[in-house]
Length: 261
Length: 360
Ligand SMILES: Nc1ncnc2c1ncn2[C@@H]1O[C@H](COP(=O)(O)OP(=O)(O)OP(=O)(O)O)[C@@H](O)[C@H]1O
Ligand SMILES: [Mg+2]
Image 1 (tube, chains in turn red, brown):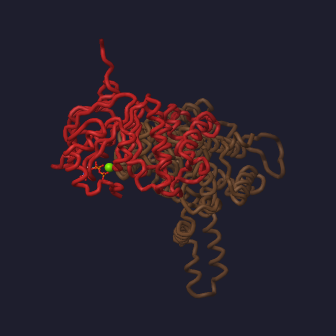
Image 2 (cartoon, rainbow over the protein chains, first blue to last red):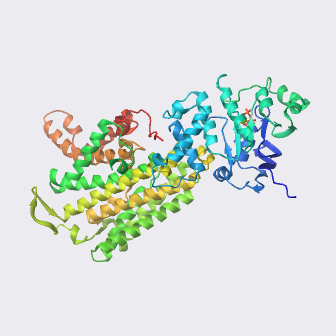
Image 3 (tube, rainbow over the protein chains, first blue to last red):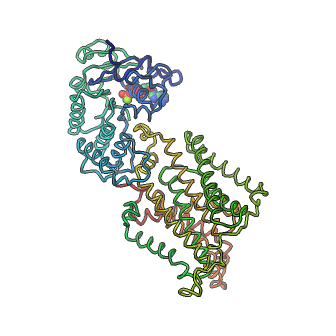
């Protein structure tokens, strides 16, 4: 029987910045319908690992496979269209465009309508309705006409998530989605991730510092330390392991850092 | 009807609407309201520059690309028509062929520049366009056998457009309807159609991608948009519109030379017009080109009058002498950028920031 390849996998993925190895031969496979939490102290290489997968950075060595196909040579746009969706740790929006437009432009990317020069964007109702749907899921329907730059930090984080949802990608990568959010805003985002996970059709990667969140959401945890993958397994087992207690909780103090600025 | 013509992108300000109505009505009725050769020439120049500036706004204001090659495309369009009318007897076939060849060459060069240079940093792209534009300016001046060199080309236009042509005998509203008037309306209608087409493009899904790229190219890539491809497409579209503006100017002036088409001082004028009018609005091109061309053509007259009026006073006559008109234009520009950083259109729309947030 031929087994189906994992949705996403990395093979000995490595990047060096000068002499510094930020991601060090990380091999890992991500199966459909699972949520993998990626933990590690500040500077462990989690965001850099994400950048290598979604193509913002080119690896020095190793490969990235999507559905078994080598995508290492592709740039970020092609990988996005192939099904790798990404939300950023540092909010990364179109500041002067409206909330609706930020999401609509992502819907439009998903529906490959970017080279439509002649119809009116305002007349493509189907794209706008989809955008509004994703904005209602993230609780931003009442801010449609505000510019992204004018939103509160929490709302910007939600918009970042809405943009990712709009891509309807196979792989969803969240980089500390709740960092800097106020306590009462956090559940909305976590519930959304839970909802996507419950659907069991997507492959989710989540960088998260808060251990209670990781415990409740993750099917599996991988631990990065100094760029290398040092532990992998079921949440309870990994969190309890010595290596995490030392490498992660030990080095990074409480481990609850809200992410660097 | 109006909704479709304006691509649902309205001026969004009473004052701006009023200003645009005045400008469009003024241009539409120019031959009758402002008779005479000089005013008609000014009106025709405004029409052409509106197209040229709007097409530059597509690059600078909407896509965030700084290019100095825009006069190059304008010049290619103009020389296309000029060379065709120079080589063949004046006919519409020659005009069409010259326009088509100029258009094709401008788009091809834009494509090449885009493919080679738009992947690199913005500053490098700006330098490449400057180098290419300067090289072509020198080329046009040197190839005197073909282009007439510094002297340029003077040629005849189809009979319908020549001053000898009479649309009707006698005068209408005190104006003789000769080929000049026909030329002017050809220019006016073509310019209007081109501006409306560009308004359409910036409000299309494609135009929205350009604005996203201007705002955050990194994010646009993460969404799956290949920014180099979109930037190149924008450059080609802008080059096409600029070339058509050049072809119109060539038909109007019956003369094409390096100074009136390829020169870098025109490039600077375009930059000033787009900034004065308001970047990323298209309407800014209409307002900016009108204000600037009027100032350029009439500031000297105004200053001569002022110099005459203040003749007895110390210092003042020297300050307002017509020779200083460029100084005053510069001062006007600095003041306008300082007080209206988002241009006249941005100011009238009552927004401080640059660009326009499109409503989805
Ligand atoms: N473009 C770059 N050039 C040079 N060094 C870089 C670059 N990007 C990341 N690094 C370095 O790589 C290391 C890993 O950084 P990364 O942002 O991936 O950490 P992280 O695990 O996401 O940390 P945090 O939890 O703080 O977000 C850091 O030492 C960082 O300084
Ligand atoms: Mg990080």
